[in-house]
Image (tube, rainbow, N blue to C red; front, side, top):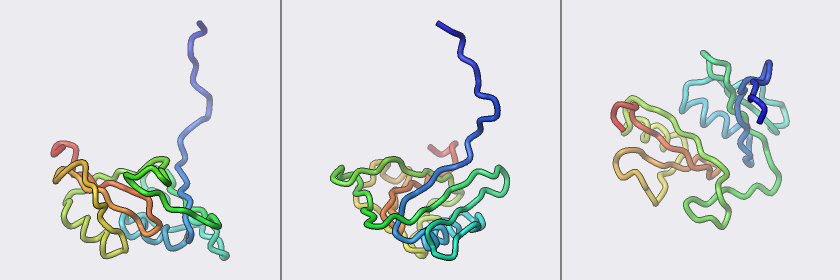
Length: 133
């Protein structure tokens, strides 16, 4: 077996979320994270956020006929979800709800973390600092 080698110049840039309204979902996550919204096209087909310290991107692209995931039901399964560490779980849940998120009915973490659904239906988790897990 050959010794694995690294790929020169390869680094993780970010990820893209499909949604019905790229600008609106970028603004939701921008307000939630404090990251700036940038690069939105005038037609609203795509937009992105960039982490100010790392340059890592969360992008959003409009998809015609978008079907939101249904979590935990697998009729329209999620492909992945985002986890965010937060200093104050209750305050962060409140902010997310104010911005348009809803708490998922099923909460597998009990009171340890919260699963929410963004305005496009993507599940994401708000988690306390690692030492609190």
